[in-house]
Image (cartoon, rainbow, N blue to C red; front, top):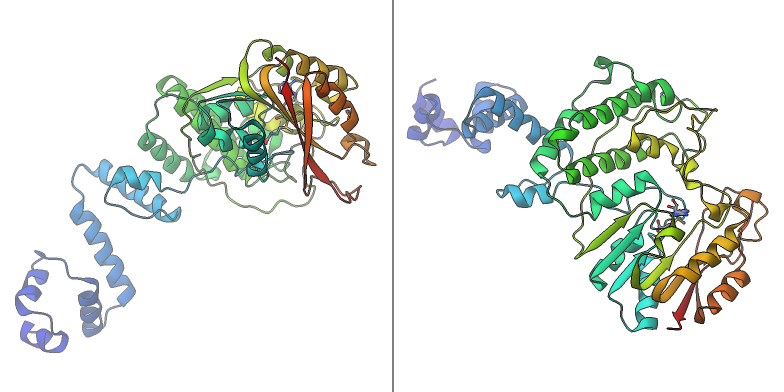
Length: 429
Ligand SMILES: C[S@@+](CC[C@H](N)C(=O)[O-])C[C@H]1O[C@@H](n2cnc3c(N)ncnc32)[C@H](O)[C@@H]1O
C-alpha cells in the first residue's frame, strides 16, 4: 500500500511512516494498533512484537547478559514490582517478606504496640532491650525506634539465622540475591533429582515436587556458602524458611501434617526484607545461662508455658538450618531431641525463678496468658499466675496489665474471657 494511502487511513505522518518502514524508528502503541487494524493483523500479537522490539532496542551487551536481564524483568513483573528508572529504589520495592509474615505459635506480632506502649508509659523510656525468648522477634522489631541497643536470644538454630538475616550487621548484595531468586524460581522440579528433603518430607509436610525443590535449593545455598557473605547466607536461609511456610501442609507447626491429599501450590521463593536497628546483639543460648552475662534497661520474658517443645514443633526448620541431615524417626520424621526447654517440664517454676533472680536489668516485663486451667494437658500452663507474681515480687514492686486476646487453641477448650497479661517489675537496685 503506498505510504500516501497509509497516511490517509491512519493519519500517521509520512516521514514517520517511512522511518518505521525502514526500521529506524519504533511506532507508539497507538500507531501499532492503527497499522495492525489497517493490515488486518492481530492487535495483541502486534503489541507483543512491539514490546519485544522495544526491549531489544534498549538492551546492549552480549546475548547472555540480555537473556539474564529479560528473565529478571519477567520475574519482577510476576512479583508485581513497580518498575523504576532507579535500580536502587526499585530493588527496595520488590515484594519481600516482612518479619511478621510467618506462622509461629505464641507470636506476639499482634500485641507488640500494646506491649511497648505499656513499657514506655511505665518506665518513662528505655534505651536497651533484652528479648530473652525472642521467638519470631516481633517484639524486638517493634522496639527498634525506641532503643539504642537490642539483645536478642532464642535457642533455636532457625530463629537465630532469621535474626541474623533481619537484624544482623554485615554486607549483602541484593542484585546477587535477586539473581539467585530468579534462578530458583525458574527450576522445573521434574528436572531435578530426589534428595534428603524429598525422601523424608515429600508427600507428607510438602507436595513431592516442592519437597524436591526445597532440598535442591537448600543444597545449592550450602554449596555457595564460601562465596556468600555471612549476611547473604542468613538472608537466603531465612527466605527459604519464610517461603516454605506458605506451602507447608500443616496447621502452622510440624508436630504433624494434614493427612489429606496435598494440593499442589508451586513454591515461590521470595526474599526477606532486612531491618536496620541501631545496634544489636544476637545470641543462641539457654536463657538462664545468658541472663548472667548481659545487662539492659528492660528484659522481656515470654517463655513457653506449657509442655509443647518449640524444637519439636519446628524440627523441619531446625533440620533445614543446620543441614546435618540426621536420621529421622516416627510419623512426623523428627530427629533425636535437641534444645528441649526446662520451661516445658515440671521444673518450669524453679527455672523461671532462677532466671528472674539472675537478670541484671532495671525492669522485668513478663508476658503471660491465663490458659493454665485448660482441659488439654499439653496446653495446661506449668506455672500459675500467682506463682509468677510471687516470684517477681521478690525482685521489686510488680504491676499487672491485661488485654483481651484470642489465643492459639486446638479446639478442646473454650477460653472464655481469655486474657493476655503483662507483668512489670521495677527491680530494687
Ligand atoms: C512463646 S515463644 C516467644 C514468642 C515471641 N515473644 C514472639 O513474639 O514471637 C518462646 C520462645 O522461647 C524459646 N525458648 C524456650 N526455652 C528456651 C530456653 N531455655 N532458652 C532460650 N530460648 C528458649 C523457644 O524456642 C520459643 O521461640
